[in-house]
Length: 117
Image (tube, rainbow, N blue to C red; front, side):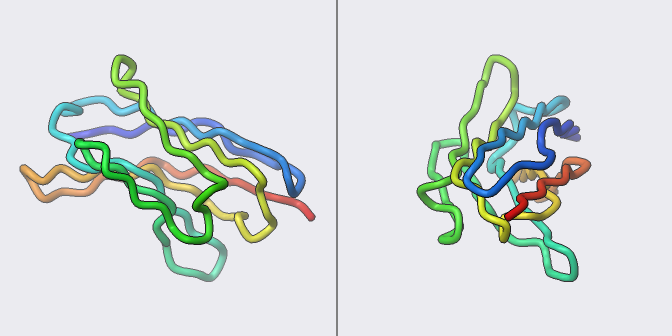
């Protein structure tokens, strides 16, 4: 079992920056992939970025070069630094973890990011 507790988010003007945090607890040593997804109103939940245990990182084309995932292993926390934000980045952002040993996925509670034009 893994628990994911998110913080951060809010309202920002276009061109601004925000940082999201996701603190993992439980069987954190078993996490194979961690990352972020987002869901805009009326749309499906989409990949933002994932990072494997070995560091392989996969960014969505729409955020590559503007968003950066980072990890503090000592704190079991993953961050999403979002720069040059655009109105189309407005969505609920979810932290994500996958454990290959159980083939189970875990989600954070979600946090709203709103970018005004």
